[in-house]
Amino acid sequence: MRIMINEPDGRISGIVVGKTVGIDYDKYFKFKELQGKSGKETIAVLQEAIENTSVGEAGDYEKLITEKMLNVLHSLLDMAKKNPEGIWRVS
Image (tube, rainbow, N blue to C red; front, side, top):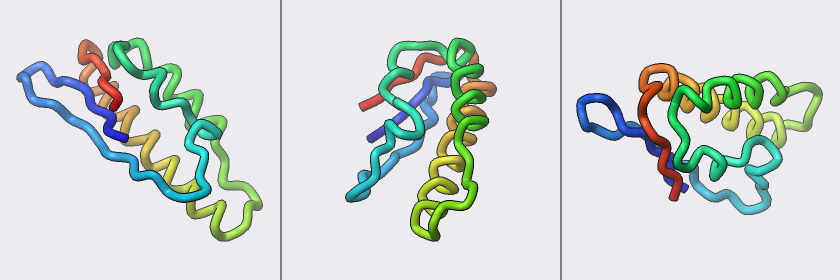
């Protein structure tokens, strides 16, 4: 899944979240809900997703996945803050 936001200078920032067997990303965050929204509109949503995602006492595999998901969410939040007028595209 590609998650991109356009920058003021015309470039595009983004990340690719690879599909991993047995992982339900929607458990952490519904990335497709970013589609068509501005960075500014999604800052609070991304912050809430980060706050609601905890590593806790999960097993090693689940802990690893949760930590990776937190890294993705933090990256998206940084992009939204840097590009508040940018529009998200998810494919």
